[in-house]
Length: 457
Image (tube, rainbow, N blue to C red; front, side, top):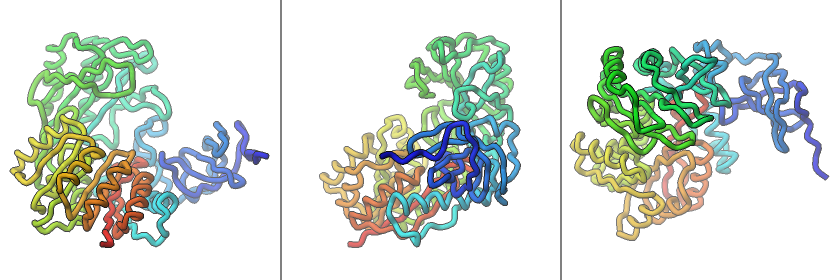
C-alpha cells in the first residue's frame, strides 16, 4: 500500500527551511515530505501554500515569514522578484558563500558517499560581487505591447525589460539600452517565438579589455533590413563598441546562437586578459563570464597541479584554451582537448598570441581522444579536467586512471556530477586531498569547484 502524501495542493503549511536547492529555492519538510519554497532561506520558518504536488516532493509559494534568517537582506535590483536571472539577491553575500560551500559538501557526502570530514575549504568570494558579467545575452520581444530586452521571468518566456542589470558590466547595460532605442527607431521586425516570425531574436554583448565591446545581433533570417543604418547608429551611440556581428539562428528552438556569423563592422574579435595571458574572443567563443574570478579559478587549478617544468599535462574539455595556456606556462608540454572546432581555432590563435609553443590542441570528443592518446603511448603526470555540467563519461574517467597520473585536478560547475565522478575516481585509487569552492556567479545559485585528487600508486 502506497504511503499517503501529506501535502495537498492549495493548502498552506508551516515549513522550517533546512537548506537551499540547486536553483536557490528553500528546502524544508512537512511530516518528512520534501517541500521546495522559492524565496525562503535556511533557518527560516515560513507559511507556504502548495502550488504543485508530486509523488516525492511539493513546490510551495512563500506566504509569510514566521522566523527570518539573519542572512536575509533587501535585493539591490528593483525587478529582482520578477526576473529569473538571479536567485540569491535576497541573501547577504556572506550567507551566499556559506551555503555554496554547504552545497558542495552535501553533494560530496550524499552523492559521492564521502565522509563529512572531507576537506572542503570556505568559498572564495569575489572582491566585488556586482557588475561582474562580461557577457550578456538577452532575448528581444514584446511585453505589454512594448519592445523589451532583458531576462526571462522566473519559469516562463515572458521578457522582463531590463535597463540596469546589477550583475552585468555597465558596457552591457549601455548596449541593451541603446539597442532598445535603435530597434524602435528603425522598426526592424522583432522575432515572435510562438509564430516563428520576425527577425531580431537576441542581443549579445561582450565587454573585454579596456571596456571595448562586441555586439552580436541574433536574427531568425539571413536578411537584416536597414543593416547599414543599424551599424551606423550603434557606432554613434556606443563608441566603445569595436566589433559588430550578425549571427543567424533560423531554427525553431531555444538555442541562442546559430552556426553562421557575419562580421558587419570592426574587428572579428575583442581581447581580454586573465592573469598575464591575453585572449581573442569571437561571438561563439567560450570565455568565463567573470574575468576577475576566472583568474582566481585558474590560479587555484595551477596551484593544485603544482607543476615544475618537466611534466606533460592534459587539459580535457579545454574550450578556448584558457586553462591549457595557464598550465603550459609551468609544464614541459600541455595538451588541450575540445569538441568544438571554432573553440580550438581560438585556442591555437591564443597560444600563438601568447607565444606558448608547448601547447598542442586537439579537436574531438574527450571520450574518443583520451583513449587514443593512451594507445599512442602518451602518459601524463597531471590531468586537468573542466567538463560541462553533465560531467565526464565513464570511459574518460577510466582512461584517466589507466594513464596513471599522480594528480587529477577536476574543475566543476556542478557539485552533483563532481561528486559522482569523484566517487568513480576514488574507486580507481584517486582520493580527494583539497576541495575549493569558488564563487564565479555571485547572487545566483551556481558554484564552481576545484578539486585535487591524488593517486595512491
